[in-house]
Length: 221
Image 1: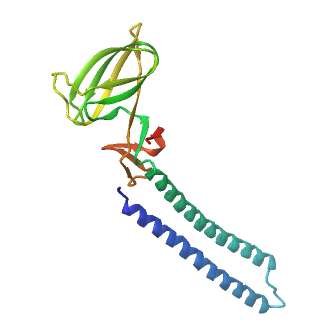
Image 2 (image 1 turned 135 degrees about the vertical axis):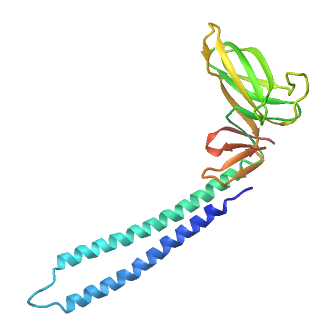
Image 3 (image 1 turned 30 degrees about the horizontal axis):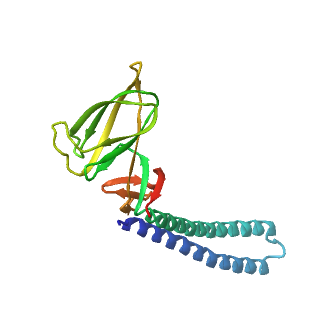
C-alpha cells in the first residue's frame, strides 16, 4: 500500500503554521490590550483619545484572531476527513467492485466486460493487450440494454493470450446501420489501495480505479 510522504509532510507543515499563527496572534492580543489600557490611562485631558476608534480596532483585532482559530479548526477537520477516507478505502480490499472502464484483467482464461447498448445491432469488437497490440477482433450482435461480453483469451491466430490487462473497443451500429455508442464497465477484486493522488485509487491488479467512480461493491462470504 503506497502512501505519499510529500502529502503527509505538507499537512503537518500546514497545521504547524496555523497553530503557530494562532498562538502568536493571541500573545499580540494581550499586548494590544496592555497598550490600549496604558494609552487610556495616560491620555491628555486636553486632547482625549477617540474611544470609538479604540473599540473598532479591538473588534477588528478580535475578528482576525477568531478567523485564525477557525482556520486551525478547519485544518483539523480536513485531516480527520482525509483519515476517514483512507480508512474507508482500505475497507474495499477483498471486495469486488464495478466501475466504468474498458480495461479489465484476463485470468484463468476469462475476461468479462459489462456492455450497455442504446439499441440492438451489430458491433466489431477489438481487444488489445497492455502494449496496445491487437490480439483479437470479433463481430457479434447485441440486444438493447445491459449485457455481458466474455472473452476466453483466444487470439486471432488461435493461441491462448497470457494473463494480464486487456482493453476492449466496441464499434457498434444499430439495425439501420447508424453508429451508436456502447458503454462498458469492468468488475474486479480489489487487492490494494494507492494514496499517492488526491483521491484514493483502488487497485485491481495494475488497474487503478478512483474510489469516487465505483458503481457497486460486492463482498464474498
